[in-house]
Image 1 (cartoon, helix red, strand yellow):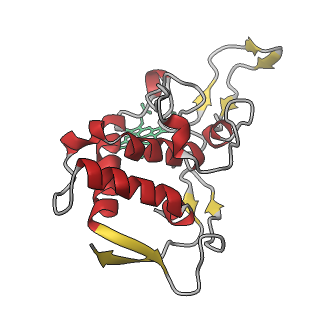
Image 2 (cartoon, rainbow, N blue to C red):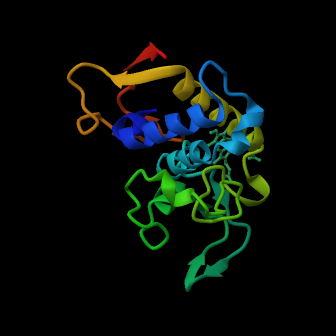
Length: 184
Ligand code: HEM
């Protein structure tokens, strides 16, 4: 929601898609999500820029291993920086911009097949809650956008909204988002 309020054009495009596919007065259902590519792109773009578990879960190396001329010694603890991978300029064009359109017509997803986008991790320890999380994210976000008109508090503009993050095991917005909902 914070990225959408910072990027009103994306919010407008999401509303347009929902109005066209779901229609005024109808509520978004789980079964609608496959017909909402822009909503899906917003969720991917948000997870790219703001992975909730920025370093995934720590791994421990079982035996010395050489990767790209670096030796990672047995018993080393390895953290994978999914946050930095999501903003790597060698993978993503204009990586710091919120630009959901980059996923339109692309088959990149968050299911651990594309190592440039791993907000749920990958491999044997990939998040087992992924299917539930993905369903809930689309449903909640779709309903929030379709059922209300959102605006920033008085005196706050998209440019001045504080988007700082705090890091720990979980990535959070440093300042809670305060926005006003109007019924449609
Ligand atoms: C947006 C929502 C979520 C995100 C971004 C997320 C992300 C992650 C990540 C990055 C990992 C570590 C994967 C790795 O290190 O390779 C993880 C592990 C895990 N997640 Fe999630 N998760 C989410 C929601 C959920 C939900 C809804 C559940 C349960 C209902 C869940 C249960 C777990 C469990 C049990 C693990 C540990 C798996 C293991 O170590 O074998 N997660 N999650």
